[in-house]
Figure 1 (cartoon, rainbow, N blue to C red):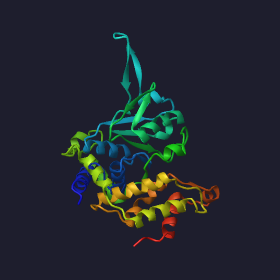
Figure 2 (figure 1 turned 135 degrees about the horizontal axis):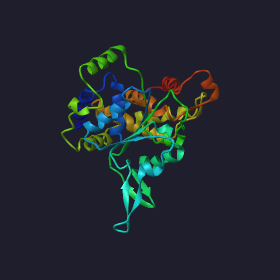
Figure 3 (figure 1 turned 180 degrees about the horizontal axis):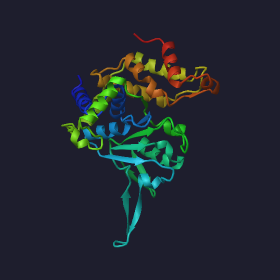
Figure 4 (figure 1 turned 45 degrees about the vertical axis):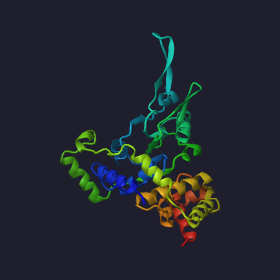
Length: 317
């Protein structure tokens, strides 16, 4: 029986809804990334509350928060930090960069050159960073939540496949529904202001170790061999589909396993089902596939191809 996860999820959802309207599916996927100890790439047009969502989440879970606005002139040391010579002591001391935090918002990550993007690779994979040959460990809950703007490509540097694969999920944020947008406007008219989060009376989790407890419960979540085989079949099918140039790696299989278990726990179960796998498969796989040129010219998308693959594979009973 899950002792920590359902109450923690309920608290986070209730608090997030004080600032975020109509994005429950996106919030659920963000929680999957946090609980499965992974990173997420958020893609959406400007003004869809990506930054507000991340800032509010960090406030709720009591995490340290840093934001980096990625620009073409950003250097790797601007992310990791650098050793500075202290004239008074005649010694070098480390000036920590924004990477030394719990939740790192990498805003418009595709606006900085590959050399600077690569500065995040070691941190995302190993939760450590190396500065002047010395290794520094990062926070145990260090999580990168990066944003991309999908409508403006001038002056951008597409993330290389190696770095895309480090993101557990790619989450798409769409425009709100009409009723939700009316609610957003009404809240602002009533005095809400995203620049003054303290006025929203956000309540931090009462248990500082709640996220660690939830992660422990998720690691203990059961998955039957039949569901494990279902995951393997889905990922292997991405390597055989005629519309796909190259498919997902075994890292994708592991990611789908972890995310399915996290989603099951978020839904209050200590076992994962094929429905959990199907519900999280698209955000886990969409950034790990490359379509053939002729497929893209026909207007197909990775999401549609993944949906096609899910229809092909028999669901275990």
